[in-house]
Image 1 (tube, rainbow, N blue to C red):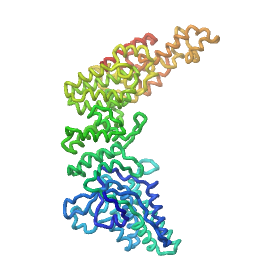
Image 2: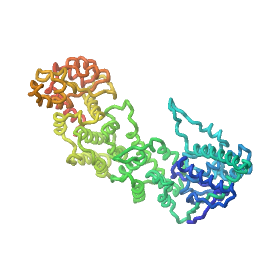
Image 3: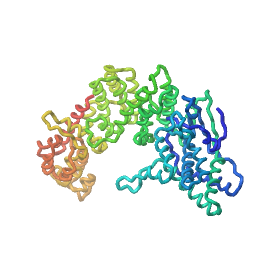
Length: 629
């Protein structure tokens, strides 16, 4: 490679263009610290020139470029920007803001040279004049706004084309492109500095502006590193960061894919628009937490894609490295980069379907809601494998997903640990790699049944029923998970004669015997004082001597009210109406309910500990039938 210092004038004064490859990130520099720091340096150099003092070049950093062989004799000489696009873009926006001010003031001595730094001459003889006229050609997603800013011609027109947008009653406007904000920042700063300096030095404003232009032209340089044919631009790109901001795994992987597309002579703009542009959205850049770490959805999606392909645990911090190894090993994974991206889009669509916010009408039987309410996103690589890699017919896929759901649901009901899920679900994928069609379900079942202990067992019917009749589920399970289980129980009780009706997602969990039962629910014929009901040990005190023998029964009842046999679902109107009332009042309210869960109580004249135990066993059996092992 060759390294040479280049002033701003030398960078932009020739007939050439700098093309930012598809693998580069978007323009991310901001007012603080990047624009402010650059402007402070510019002002310092300009002030020295105004004072007629000697100045030394200020180096802005490295610019790494790679020459590209022209495809036509009419094509303007082209260089790929391997590193330094943030600097180049910022300089172009600064020069554009300065040019537009000079054009407005009719300072031709400044307007003309600055225009040469922004646009190439003679567009009528170019191969692609709409593109090649610009000295800098940004990435696809930055391109339209960049062109709009450079062709606006004035600060007022930029503000018109990119006006602030206020949504609803929000006091703050929507976020505007950094490209626009950088241009406007420099427009304001340049105008203020010229005006202030002209006034303080009693010099003509155009003279001051010309001195400012000279400072930008000659006093700022980059170290231009031009790669030779033998240099690996991909490896060089991997080793670089921009302003201390490390490249994400998806940044690195995008570079790998589009550099390979370049070598295959693919139309990169076309495949970007057709495939990768789907991932350059707020959804995919949005950050979510997993195991105490924060990742973008795109980084996680790439990780799950690779797990579904390899059946191996992939460190989220090494996705790009693992992907490079996988894609380069024989036999070839894809016939072309286009096929590779098409496959990734398929997996991305599946991942997004499960990671997107749940619709309010999503039924309890939808696997997306099951995973969300049970908080088991670690199963996604296995599900992506089953849906996209295992070549399963619809019935076979349903059988396999049913097993996965049963494994998860039973363990959630028993409150089993989930700390090894990230490893276990990957192991399941590994055990299924290479199997297709009818081979998959038996292999999956065998692997699930082979798990043991609190971290990997697939609970038996006996485990589920024993838990149902012995554990206060309400105190253990999170509300969304418990509500989902009760909704599934409700749906399981309906038959062909039942009117088709969705279970509303705003239903509340109801204690039939209320948590504060003591006022209207006598125990062994006695109304229990609130103090004793809440704190059974009070029964041992002298002033509550008549309840001394009821201490243990009170404790048992306080535990039983939270058993699954004492829980149901009601809407927001029915719940307050019943409140802590006695069973007769509640029974009257339940008659307003259309839920099978609440019709069950119509056969009872009283509701007590035995009734709760009987229903707990019954619901345990229902859970086993909903999620068979």
